[in-house]
Structure formats: C-alpha cells, structure tokens
Amino acid sequence: MYFEQFSLDRRVLAGVQTVGYSTPTPIQQEAIPAVLAGRDVLGIAQTGTGKTAAFMLPILDRLVKEPARHVRALVLAPTRELAEQIHQATAELGRHTPVRSVSIYGGVSKQPQIAALRRGAEIVVACPGRLLDHADAGSIDLSRVEVLVLDEADRMCDMGFLPDIRRIIRRLPTNRQSMFFAATMPADIRSLATQILRDPVTVQIGTMTPVESVSHALYPVPDHLKRDLLVAMLRRTATGRVLVFTRTKHRARSLALFLKKRQGGRVAVLQGNMSQSQRQHAIDGFRSGTVDVLVATDVAARGIDVSDISHVINYDMPDTVDAYTHRIGRTGRAHQSGEAFTLAVQGDILMVREIEKAVGKPIERRRVPDFEYGDFSPEDQFPLWGQS
Ligand code: AMP
Image 1 (cartoon, rainbow, N blue to C red):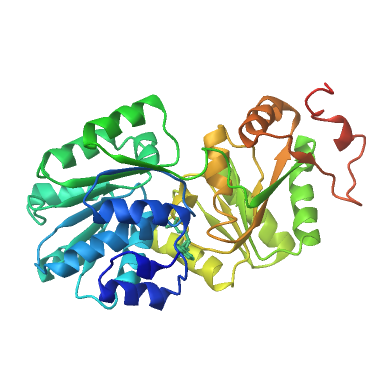
Image 2: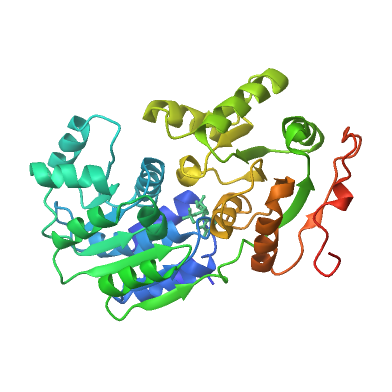
C-alpha cells in the first residue's frame, strides 16, 4: 500500500515525501481513511506505531482545503516534549501547505505563544494546563475548533489532567470530529472515550502487549551490584543509543553521575526537575549522537522522539506492565528492531511474572559473561514457569 492511495491533497502528499515515509504503517492504513471520512476514532496504539501522522495527515488535508486563519484543530498531549514533537512533525508534514501550527506548554514564557497565536494558526498542539491559562486570559479562541485529538490520553489521566481536559472540552463546539489515542484502556479511560467520541471507528494496533520487534532479556542481579552490572552491560553491548530507566528522579540523577564517571561524558539525564531548556538539551544530544546513554524516569521519557534507540535498559523494574510496555515502546519503533534488557533483583519476581504473562512467553534469562557475581548465581533466580 502507498500513501498515494489515500485521497490526500497533493500538498499533503508532498510533505509525506519530504519526511521520507514510503509505506503507511498499520495504524495509518486503518485510521487515515476513517478520519478523512469524518469519523471519530478510538486508537489503541502505543508510541512508535506512526500514530502522529495517522491523525495529522487527514487534519492537514481538511485544513488545506478551506484555508482560514483561526484555531480549527486542537491536539492535547501530556508532556511538553510530546507536544513539541507533534508540533515539529506537523511542521514537517505540512511544509508544503500554508497551514500553521503552534505549540503551547508551560515552563516557558507565554509571550511568544501569544504572539504566534496572534499571527494566526489553524493547529494548536498543547498541554492542558497552559492551554487553559491562555483560554482564561482570552489569548486563544477555542470556539471554532473542528477537530480534537487527545494523544496519550491514558498518560494525561495518570498525570491528573482529567479535570483540565473536561474544562477544555466544555469550551469546544459540540459538533466536531474527535480522536482519542491511548496505549492502554483501563475502565476510566474507556468511559472518558465513550463520553467524548461519537460512534467511533476503533483502530487497535497489535494487542496491548509490548512491541514484537523488540527482544527481551532478564538480567538477575543482587541489588548492590546493579550499577557495576549496568556498566559491564554497556561495555559489552554493541549499542547505538541506549535509554536507561530508573524508578525515581533522584536515582536517575545519581546513576547518570555514576555512569559519567565510569563512561565519560556521553551520558545525560532526563528527569522532571530539569528546566525545559535542560531537557531539550539532553534530548537534542541524544538525537544528534553526542550522548549515547540517556538515563530517564518514566514520565520524563514520554516525549522523546528519537527513532533509532537500539536498547532500552530497565535499571529499575517498572511498577506496572503498562509502564514496561511504554518503556520498551521507545525501542523497535516504526520498522526497526530493538532490545529490552531488564535488571531484576529478588523482590521483582512478581512483576517478572506479570510481564511474562503480557508478553505471552518467558523472558530469556541472561548473565553477563566474565562479570563478578560473587556468591550470586543468576541462573538460580527467577525460575521459568513450570520449573518453580
Ligand atoms: P509516532 O508513533 O507517531 O511517534 O511515530 C514513530 C516514528 O515512526 C516517528 O519517528 C515517525 O517519524 C516514524 N514514522 C511514522 N510513520 C512512518 C512511516 N509510514 N514510515 C516510516 N516511518 C514512520
């Protein structure tokens, strides 16, 4: 299948060519015709499936056909990184159209955002809190929005944005097209979707299990040897970009410092207490290749749009299977493959079982050859199902 087979405006197709996509991903194949037909869409898909273009190409197609300089499409996203990433993707895909996009998020000055809104933009990509600030101050008019997209709606709810989302929706015309994307569909998210969407087409990409192009491995380790094992893993692995997850901001910071000492300067940290420019600096370094190990927390990593992450390493076990899925969704994106390594200490056994259930098979246990485990025997830990 080719993008030319959708009846997209030629200026929108030119954007697809510029970014270099040749064939639509599965979610694009399913969602684009539905959105072009004006339908509401419930998309159950994680990041890395190509969902941004799945909703943005038909939006651009709609907007380019009847130019008008007011806000006509609103995309809500949980983090500034994700908002910025969607805004950038929109700018690239819409490069051959006169359609303009503005990104709106907190942590930076309002003035440039107000100025951009005054110049006129048809698409606004926003985090809920700052958008409401603008709406309350009268610097944005949401009364003529035709299309609403909630991206990573499950994450937005996790982050406590639900009341803000409801307030925003009350300001929008009821007669509009809505799209709702989430990687997971717990009951509260499903009920929000039902309230927002009208007779939606459901697009589900894969089951809600981790990406299949990723291979998984478990590295049992005693707690006090975690750091050394990670260093040994990084040394042995012919890696490109490595994203390392920790449980807390504090652990991210101290692990990054430790790795910097051991690995040199090519390590950066990404966690919620950093300023927007510090975060952008870390992400830019990772993207451009001056940084090859990025240590991040779950929330901070949400918006990273770096397509060829070769390895995700769970230095700390994620708290939920969904978090595991989100983390490793960072590798093996689009059409590439990747590896997900998880360090597991004794207390992690239940979570290992949960993840294996979701993946549908046991995760391979590995030891790092030549690593000094002391009395600890990785092979004796975490027996496979049926052997315990
Ligand atoms: P997303 O799920 O929207 O974050 O997209 C994940 C990555 O896949 C991004 O880096 C996109 O640029 C890339 N991508 C999206 N659609 C395609 C496509 N049809 N072909 C190749 N890469 C794509």
